[in-house]
Length: 610
Image 1 (cartoon, one colour):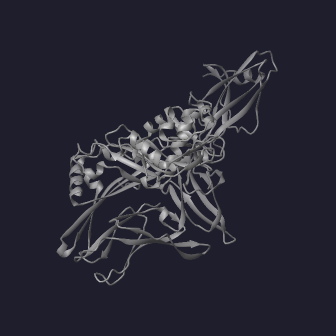
Image 2 (cartoon, helix red, strand yellow; image 1 turned 45 degrees about the horizontal axis):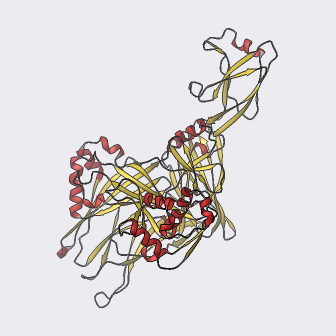
Image 3 (cartoon, one colour; image 1 turned 90 degrees about the vertical axis):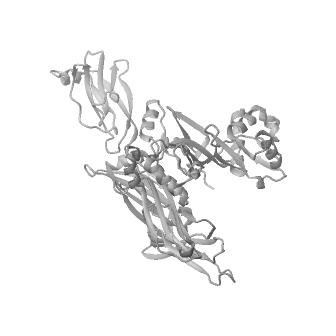
């Protein structure tokens, strides 16, 4: 298993008020978690949707339910954090930290008389690197409660999110052994008999008295710092025996570990803490579930959120499964996709096999799949995705793994396909400057394989559908400036399942730049001063810098942060005082030192004013 580019939990770095994590085995690279989840609007659509489905089932009466959907975009605040790192002398390559999903807890549920089910932990599913979605099925009564709350207004609704990420656990030159059953008994003793324990409480016990948890540590462990040892043990516990979950509603915002009792049987487990291990952690951040909807009047809010769907009438014995795809909208290489549901015969009540299917289009609208069961039959079905893929000049069908479910709401994600769906997205602010051509290349069955797509302001994301038998898949990109057609390339990178987010810093010419400055004193001057700035910042006093040369120090270096690959040069001018400077130079590139003569200062500033 490759750990490359995963966050290394033992190497956090503070950047201002943010914390980034070193990318494992990639010196100089750091992964930055999101700062906030914000409601995501797309094509003018509301980020909050309530799809109400109504169906006449004959003698069984009128069936009514709804699917509540919330779309979030992760706000990484990369540009601000990069500038903060540069200003603090931290020369690092920052990129977004991918999340695998997580949980959301809405605030003010009781105060607004919202359905009680919305006060529980709600699952967040990752649709791409920077997008997470939530989908909840509400029954008829809960649907009415939510519609009534919409009509009164939801301004007070906020949310807390816990994002699930996997990184490389802390590593120490130690081994330990323990009995899982004894560890579980110790956890129960600390948590009042529960198999769930507050993360901070368990960590504190590991720091202060690890022997009370039945952990067999060697005598040399006394030479190791207690905090890293506690983190290394908890990471491995979370990877094997317990799931990190958000804290209980009545507890302070935090994380608890919920132990899998069935996995903690008596026996002996030996761990080598020096070996790398992928371990899950939760990152708690604020979430805004409404975003632009907060400014709407209650009546407008209802009209923007609610969609009603009437489906055909059915006789008794029919059941309806709502299907919703949590997938990237643009899937390069996929002609069409669908899900197939199958229920084997159950004689004598039902003598026939049931088969049904539904298309998985690029839409957030749920699709109802009707299944005719026997009147007393419990819902249970097998389902499988299939995709028609255009590859190597021909069309083929690729099926996903077969799965079993008994739920009335079926959420389908990228992992349910027989393909790697690699999400690629671009920072919207960068797409104001450029369009991006993206290409995925590899080898399939001994022959070159490739797929291409374009990211622009109207289409800022896509996903490459890569068959599992494509070897060495890599992604490369070229950005073309809208202003003058200038092109900048990105070095090819491995296609990672967690995707790729492109911005100005992905392309050559952006990032930290360095220039050697030399002034030859060829007159009787003692000091000469210039003012220098990035080419796009001569009017920004905070980014201009005055550089002084003396006969004893005629040479120096200047570094700056280029925020655009298309504006990576600099400009300079002689500086006598606040009222007298020479004109700014043309734009220059830092591929050669800036060489000056002291005698030119007087010539350039003669007659110059402010």
